[in-house]
Amino acid sequence: METISCNNQTDVKITIPSLVSLKKKQEATIVKVNGVEVGGSEVIIFAGPCAVESMEQLFETAGAVKTGGAKILRGGAFKPRSSPYSFQGLGEEGLKLLSQIRKETGLPIVTEAMDTRQLEIVAKYADMIQIGSRSMQNYSLLKEVGKCGMPVLLKRGMMATIEEFLFAAEYILNHGNEQLILCERGIRTFETSTRNTLDLSAVPMLKNLSHLPVIVDPSHGTGLRWMVPAMAKAAVAVGADGLIMEVHYKPEEALCDGQQSLRPDEFNNLIIELRKVAGAVGRKIS
Ligand code: PEP
Ligand code: MN
Image (cartoon, rainbow, N blue to C red; front, top):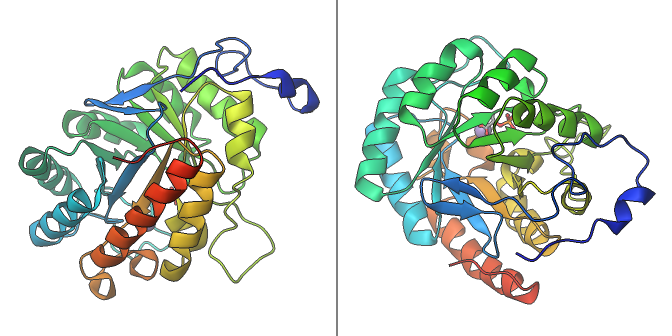
């Protein structure tokens, strides 16, 4: 993608940390996830289940998203759940299933590490490390992923301002890692009809302030399956470099986030629509 003008930065009254700033580095950073480039002219689709549940679930879902056009497979093995009684993920067993599926599909894998103790094992199996919304302010973890030398997906904290989000990103760059993608996943507001309020204005704002790629998660951003396609299309229209979406081969049986997971046919149809939107804004989805 061509260099973006940062002339508008002066109109924005927040502090922008130096390493993430587009003033410091005026060409867009391309993040390479096992051969897949994020931040270029292509809009990259990340998709897969919220959590890895079983070989069958992962195999069926990964095959479906690959056919539909996903380039990177998502799936949590360590899950940050609101209740300690909810499914916590399969742990290392889940990571092993992910790496097995990578062998079969060729899709690179992004999966979450919730704390520094999990980092080593997650890094052993994954192609990209996800830092979840709840961990955006876990500064020890940010420092460690900064040192780990692997691509990182940093999700915006649900209560974080753009300034706080950029400072969290700065920790990772400051510890030596520029292979970082920012993800808008919705913030807490007074609204209760959606799970979160998907702040799509964060996309042009972040693209104007930083050289880092920005992707959008309309699944957690809305919490509602039927709303995901509309917000995914809007995200591409406002300049997102990618989308991360939850897909499940049988959402009604999902152990986590089934209500916001697309069915494979819905995912397929959405990608067809997204290709038109991408084309209209000078981008491409292959
Ligand atoms: C997830 O991607 O599975 C997840 C838990 O997302 P978030 O950290 O944005 O809530
Ligand atoms: Mn989820």
